[in-house]
Image (cartoon, rainbow, N blue to C red; front, side, top):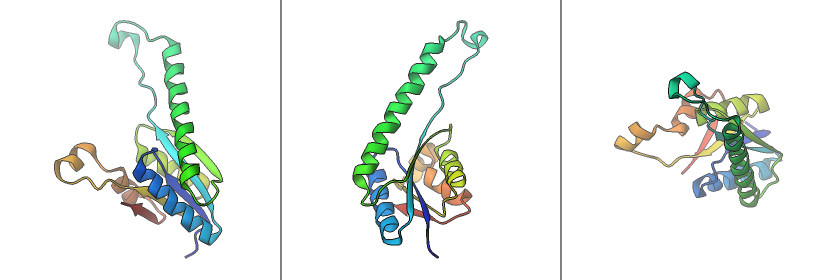
Length: 147
């Protein structure tokens, strides 16, 4: 199988940058496109009746701007970590990082997803969940997990 469109997920962590490096090496050797996705949680929304007062619209704008600034930093780190040029960057907004990654892969027509996994065990895995496990379970394309 030859991969032509590789998507790597990054949250800017050292582990994610190792995944970016691995994806970049694969993309470089295969002449594949390399895209990076980062996923931000959408700002919470509250109805005034729920909290007794309304949240100014500027708060939501500031949260979105902060998420965009964070994504920009993550993409800069990814560009530094990748030995191959990054073709596309996607800043997805989703309450579930796994869903955001899978949606980006679908929209890009990716044929490989690369991502890091911290390998949580025991109670930490139950409490924290595993985005890598969710992507592995739901993906219809190959997934490479970097530890």
